[in-house]
Length: 434
Ligand code: ADP
Image 1 (spheres, rainbow, N blue to C red):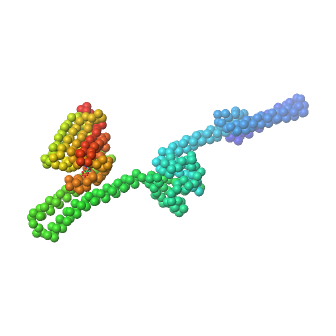
Image 2 (tube, rainbow, N blue to C red):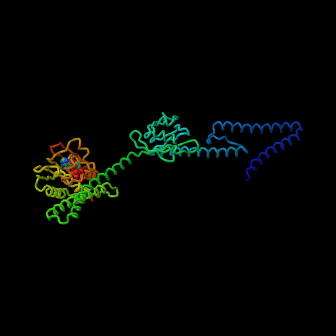
Image 3 (cartoon, rainbow, N blue to C red):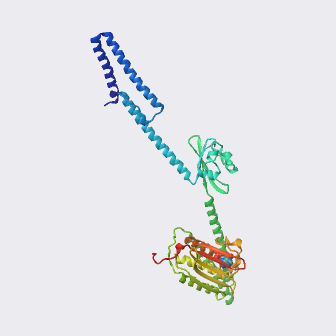
């Protein structure tokens, strides 16, 4: 039924009933009594309405949808509508509170910093990343001017110039930060900060690597070009001289090839698209091959021994051949003639251990921690003389990383070196595995 009718019909019926009953009373007991009866009934009706108004008024002081007063007549409708309004309101508020909590949690987990400021840069709110990047503290610094908190001349210039469409890059407490101010609403601004320290470091490493690689390639290229020029200018060179030039050119070509191969190996080892595929590594077979290669490289100048006394492991045969081969060839290359090289494989307390001990030139303690850096060499000329690329130990480091193994280097200058590779117990091969 029409709500207007629902409201008015019962009210009018009630008033009509009062007049009807008063009329009947007046007819039987006289007009005065009838009027008094109708006045009393109307007063009762008004008092009842006032009573409901009072209950509504008291409820409005503490509106709670669970404690809404019961109604009568039109009040039933009023109360039930209020009840619905109140319930919707409570639901909206609960949703809003939940949404706000979720938003705050997301802001807290965000790796980028977010600072909310008013139009004159007074701090209103910031997330933990912004606290870390800018050295702020939300509880301590709220209400303070951001330019008083971030004291940096470049940041001040950025604010003064107000060219917020471009980000600002600055170094703050050894962090490389990229920040930008974004105005929002009418009277608020957001300062967003991004920590670019790590990407900057990677970029620098990439630049260094390219510079080093180019430098390494330039030397053999210069030698080859020089000999080619001689061959062009002096076509009638003596056969012996020509052969010696060709030999030197071949050597330099080989050096470039080694370098390119090592760079490709490193790139592959670092790539996430190239996962390690573990297989059964037959240690005695692998180490025997490595010993033979070492004998060939040494050409009888060293006493090389191999002792295998440990289990097989799971890993990549090719990668381990490259890592163990690098360590053993280093031992040969950095040990003068008549020296000794002992290769061993045994079971240590924490797992299998591969070790190469040489009686060579040794390494000063301050150089040990840098050996696995790309192109790092203690003695550049000696490394080149022995056909080193400067990438061998970087390759070893990456292979071991992929096998959860660790490299331990013990050495002293002039007293030989010991390179140990420690594998975890989990690497031990068991015949039941597939
Ligand atoms: P390289 O190709 O120059 O040998 P590596 O990465 O294999 O490059 O080794 C880095 C440096 O570590 C070498 O240049 C050398 O100075 C030092 N080094 C490595 N192995 C030994 C060793 N067994 N004895 C002495 N020095 C070593």
